[in-house]
Image (cartoon, rainbow, N blue to C red):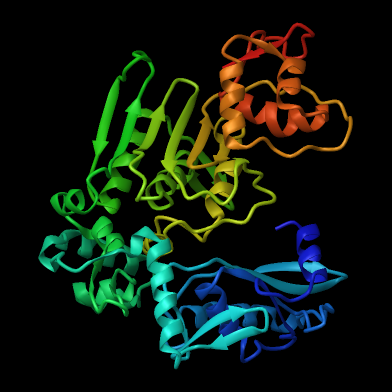
Length: 470
């Protein structure tokens, strides 16, 4: 996160989504109560090395590595936080002092710290363990907000794929040799992963939709979620229909592998030396795209996930529970988990990294892969555009104050407006944006680089007669 935003939050003081801990030489004893409360409520921002009044005290440089290790170890210890939850720690330098910034997203599950349930309000972290009404309402709210937590009490363990359980164990152990899933039976693994729950209000318990989507056979998945599918399409020669297609309706683990096989079949690989290690940039980019459309989609929405390979771009869409609208700025955004429990399983087996890393990785590696920047558009349908060929970038001229980024529906209107070629000024006037530099950098260039807009004179991007069309 940008330092300006961090300073703004610290200057605003503590509140329902902001907490300070001094933690100069060691973690405060109540750090994990705050983490638990944030997970259980609306998420929040935790700052270590800042006292209660908002003064930067900093963390002792000699204790930084130990404190970071202690925090991550505790978050992976079910005796401390249950269910466990992975969080990353960001070091930030303010006034020459190092502090830790930890973004804690809202979780889809109810968490305990040292066996107690904490909730968050303006006064801080509240122990609600003994208040059965508040605990019950918390479970109801979580299960009502996150589709992945819907319980299917009549789903049988025998309807889950034993081969997928074995695959998940093997992948988890490859990430961590002492992984607890290694010795668990199938039911224990489901409970450990938060994929087998009990509704405290109705008393019903069973496998959740998340458990069915990860481990279920195709018949069980279709019975639980008839509209579930992922469409992988190659559209190069036959642009009206397709040249190749994979209609994927299997579990999320196999779906991920089939998407990556589709990528390997139709996209060139490109190797790159990073820190003396040879990596496949294509796979680095598209593992993030594949995981995003599988685990960060709103499964209650019947809109099918799509992965389309074209001549000049790859275009992906998935249904979304939007936390904003418009083009995402990778330097200034907060990631929100759409299905945290499913995402956690993918992280445990090495299919994804920490929350929010996907967008950053795609930006980083696509510049190397094609020389162009991707475009992410947040809305009820989340859209990802990965350019496969570099595009010329027009130059900008500084002008007035930046305007707000157009919302997703305005982007759709703009593309419809540009079905017949329009000049830069015509598009800018259409969006009612006065700042020419902002328009080029934040609107026009990303749409060009993403292949959503094309130039009538690509050989002369600065031409005064240049127009753009969709």
